[in-house]
Image (cartoon, rainbow, N blue to C red; front, top):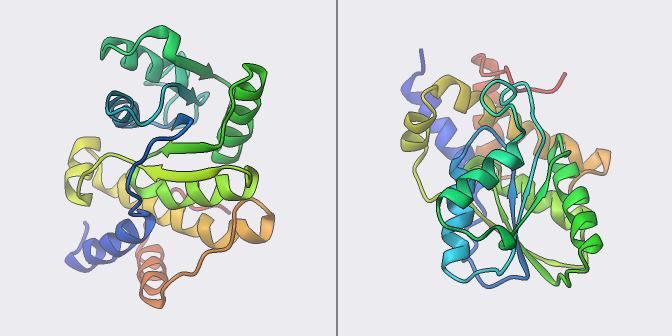
Length: 215
């Protein structure tokens, strides 16, 4: 059972996780692999709007996606983009990344192999992982400008689209925990966290939204 307070706390995390960047033209768009094909849709929309000439889809599989995306997240994203009319020549696939750090590192390596000159990247992620994607890229690829983007939706509509509200809140809590822990491990830059966001995170954690927490 998700209480009204749980939803209010989740909205605080949701709002904090989104960077509020205005999309602008970048050298490349990178769609970060996940269970959510909406990331591919958002990437295609930005491509059609002329925000980048080239797409990199990155991602292997995870415990969440191994059943629904057996070919790998990046390959399923690619198939979706092709269905939506993106030419194959505008898509690169990075099929091995299993976390956000590898998404960035391996995409950077692939673009270097392809001799693509990159001064800016538009990262497309799930709505509740914009901030972590941004913080990771800033740490691991400090020479480029980073813009974050995701599907334009509300928390409630997103949960409805996934079909499992509890899982979405679990993932919000897990994303928030990583923002707290990863700077000390050298995975992301440090970011200020408002007290209200920290309280909301702790309350959701204590209420049992814990399936995506790190040990």
